[in-house]
Length: 355
Image (cartoon, rainbow, N blue to C red):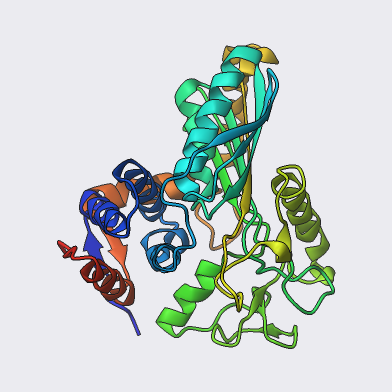
């Protein structure tokens, strides 16, 4: 059965989302930033991390689990490093500030790495990595989150999806933008399948007994990137563990199963950790030569002969660029279940949806 989605203009969706967050007590400046990141996800076709996440945020705001007046503080600092404490504020504003500070240091020193502790869910990692592109820099963003991924050979979830994003500028070509979880898929893909009552591919998720399931309603945890050991899932597990260490121990915060989330019996601050990097190309090589080389790389890869049934090889970021062109022009397709859900959330704080 084909589900009829509602196409909503991105500006209307972003304005509504910000108004709702303000209704829950978030400062307008921070609400605008959260809404911008959420709608950026929807615009790019990453439906798992866009406005469907509004309920998760407002549930935590309603329960008083997020600090509405956070004060970002510096824990340690050197010329090329920065460790910040987000004071349990919304993850999106904290991450925007952290990446801006990281970029400023990278401009001065050539490279900077920044960690953030005591934060919350920050949406798509690619948003923050791409901030570096506006300054001609390369950028990386990582985060941990509530445990959803089963380590290779284990029965229950113990790691987060531990996403990592990297943004690399090109010359004449569009920048390369990789944004990927270290799980086989994001949990939002399971939620989409649940809403549409469709089976999921074998290898995405496991049930309560740790067995692979194709029923999204039986899924309780995700597999690491690669799936089982037979298909090299230990590589995704290892990469996820590395990101957990950067965003957990290095950021002086919890990791994996120690990060609180909506599944915990006793809710509390998540204490999520992030890590960001930015660097100047000319600190390593000629910027013109580098960008020309990236152009040639993109062009060579896109010219490769494809297998039957595949029209072309796509570069990381290309599907998102194409989705954005369509959705900016024609509106963001939002599932009717999500539309009704966010309308109800809006009404709770006296904000009527303009769609």
